[in-house]
Amino acid sequence: MPVGWTGKHYFDVSKIYGPMVYFRVPGRQFIILNNYDDAVNLFEKRGALYSDRPTLYMAHELVGRKVTVLFTPYGERLRRYRRLITAATHPRAAPRQWPLHEQETLNLLGRLLATPEAFLDHLHTHSVTVSVKTVYGLTVAGKDDLYAIRAKQFANLTNMSSQPGRWLVDSFRWMRYIPAWVPGARFKRIAKVWKAELEAFSRVPMQAVKQKLREGTAEPCFVVDQLEDPEFASDPLRDELIEHAAGGMYSGGIDSTASLFQIFVLCMTLFRDAQKKAQAEIDRVVGPDRLPNMHDAPQMPYVEALIKEVHRIHPIVNLIPHATLTEDEYKGYTIPAGASVIANTWAFSRDENMYPDAERFDPDRFLDARAVNAVDPRNYTFGMGRRRCPGTTLTESFTFLAVASMLAVFDFEMPLEGPQPELKFDDALTSHPLPFTCRILPRSAAAVVLINQQRASQHA
Image (tube, rainbow, N blue to C red; front, side, top):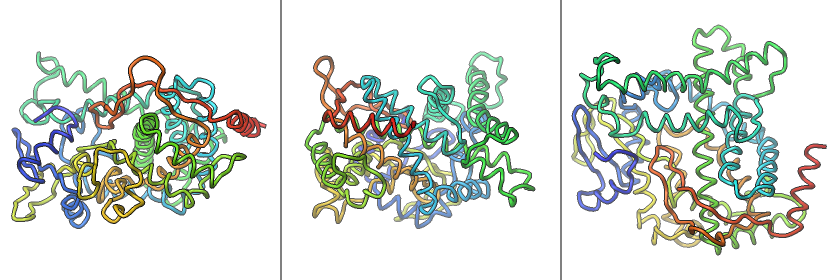
């Protein structure tokens, strides 16, 4: 079994052995689904059987991730998490967040104008700022803010603790009983440190909100809404459920959106024709005197198609396993109870039946005659079935506003010197482009004036 989140490897294997790839390692069985229709049939049409998580002993038990939204087993706790998050992020609730998204997008434009060479930091800070403000009502000062630093640590530790094939204890049950002081049990000592750091990720901002509530200075946000809900007051699990639901929103809204924005900038740098076509649409709809807003979205089909293509060209999150609750039969195959069943979203994104010439970056595939078969990649990049991210509506509006606004005022160009950007990515749970450089230039003097005027009026 390869170590890491190697979607391309399993896609290549499927060309030899077929779209459903089965293998086993000691103590674990895996089925990799390389066909989108198979994933729909199992994760969505048979969701009651395929919504559990396999036990990753290192991540779940030793590092304590079993109680979190991403890793908790299928059952009442997961349903309660999803109800809490869905109530705050469903389509009718999303417009309440648009003013925040507009404010922070303007701050992002200001940072990109001032120090464009630090765009990777700015994109991450933007994701952290919106997430922390939405969930906790707290302010992030910049890339060196505690919440921004902890967000990167959280993503790194979650990736390392849950990486397939990395920890022998996930496969060999007897290793669970080795005392931490024994040579060879370093994984237990590592897990103890990681557990404390990951628990602080959701506990510290939760405590900060409670303190602000006591002082009467708390701002409206997800956590405040839940803590002040009278129907929740007598629930003995109230604080624990709110803390982990909030932590799930916080973490889910940072690393994946930061990666998406980085991929967007990379693609705009590499594929100038798509950039110019999107900018022409924005200019036609918005004009030169204002920035885009969410009411413009229905009039910008090409920008929407471009966002879909950014999702497709490199799915950000891949190979997160579901698990079967009971044995099942599918297409003549027996799928054992407890097996890890994994949707290979990278394979879906390269399916020539859905996306002809799949290696090419081409937003028009979602607009012309090919659109009949072109599945919206967000149907699988946000997860599938009862494990699908419940906050997708909020994420989509946040993404549209940032992408359209950056395109409205900036050009993305290749660097004049040094290595040229390439479509290359790391191999992590949430995958990011390998570090790259580009030039981010104001489209005109009027664009600079517009950003500065809008920011001045914001702070007036």
